[in-house]
Amino acid sequence: AQKITQTQPGMFVQEKEAVTLDCTYDTSDPSYGLFWYKQPSSGEMIFLIYQGSYDQQNATEGRYSLNFQKARKSANLVISASQLGDSAMYFCAMREANTGNQFYFGTGTSLTVIP
Amino acid sequence: DADVTQTPRNRITKTGKRIMLECSQTKGHDRMYWYRQDPGLGLRLIYYSFDVKDINKGEISDGYSVSRQAQAKFSLSLESAIPNQTALYFCATAMGTSTDTQYFGPGTRLTVL
Image (cartoon, rainbow over all chains, first blue to last red; front, side, top):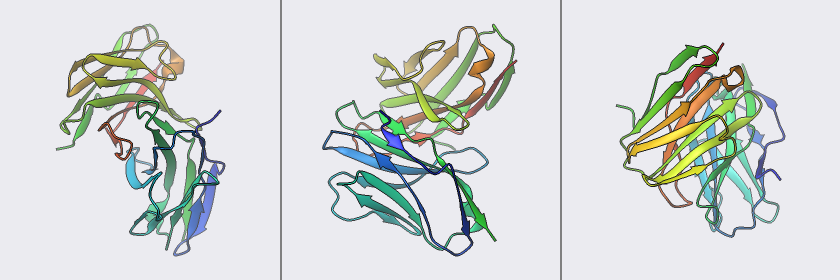
């Protein structure tokens, strides 16, 4: 079974609008971390935001927030006020404590911001 | 200077050749990882190492080998390259707790003809 599922291969959003990128995960480990990364066309992987399994509040980092719904095992990334520079691939990842803290990645969502 | 470096950044080689991709880090992390990225498949783990004496196979280790020469250095080798190993390869490092992110190198774009 897939550990991380991203069901949106491609998304479009109008500049200055908000967009939600979906991510669901599968684990039986009570201790885990959820991460989002951005990969622009230049290729580097940029860490955006982290959510811990025991965190009570949703993580926020500037225009990025993580909508963490533990019971549904979802960790959606919300980008507010989209900018042209947000056009990139976005990857959701999970790190479990009981598998030696390996990272598992989704297949990514390609976001295009339309001017 | 970058915390995680990879050499070379780009490489074109021929089928059957031996290739080594090198990764160095200055972050002082024990854990190092090698991934490959193919379009539509995300990042897939090739090998990972928790310290110099602990090396583990990942999801797609066939056709690859690794060497952890020091805490800061982790090399990936393709003993006999084949065209379906054409991909973008990333090295990454991390600390040992589930709250810590990975730090990625800039990637090596490998083409096997």
